[in-house]
Length: 282
Image (cartoon, rainbow, N blue to C red):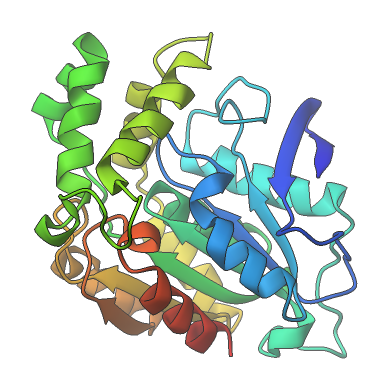
């Protein structure tokens, strides 16, 4: 689905079904140097089971035109602008946001989880569920990794790719014949980097994560509106370990589900991730 958002072309995958803004909507928001394709299994499931789906390409990523936006706050506003462009209305006063059928479910992974939080805080009346996958706050990035991403981005990608997968996912043919999770993730990151002509997208995305400070204020706005929060975390996640999400989960009053996976939960534990997300959105 192609839209115009804030004056630029934007793309969202609709799960193989025509987008219907009258249906309960699930918005999937990818992480650093990724695009909508990381959500394909989940997007297709919900699109074929009574939901409308928007798996977005963030500005400057995939099929959405740049420039990439420089902070989580701007990206949260972009998500809401995309929903406006798609014709997704806020929940009405007669249909409270606590009802799953009356509002949008925002599902974000890693950097995308912070964007989902911020989008929910900016327009809480339209949101019924907030699902943060592979999340943490603060989402700080080490000085060493930031400098490597600036000076040797391909080397930094290889480092992040290794950190993002648990040891069980290291070998080819996991989780099934013909799959190579690390190889496909590396190729995706390299494609996103090469496709961005306006600078170093890898460093940009890491700085977006590193600089976000508004989580406590965003949490207060989300909880005051009664938005239900969920977290899905990887027990073996070296990028955003579960302990790094504990304080945020407590502030949100979020239910936490933990899967036997690293940071790349959607590919390392596809069936478990689908089951967990179905429970989160039930």
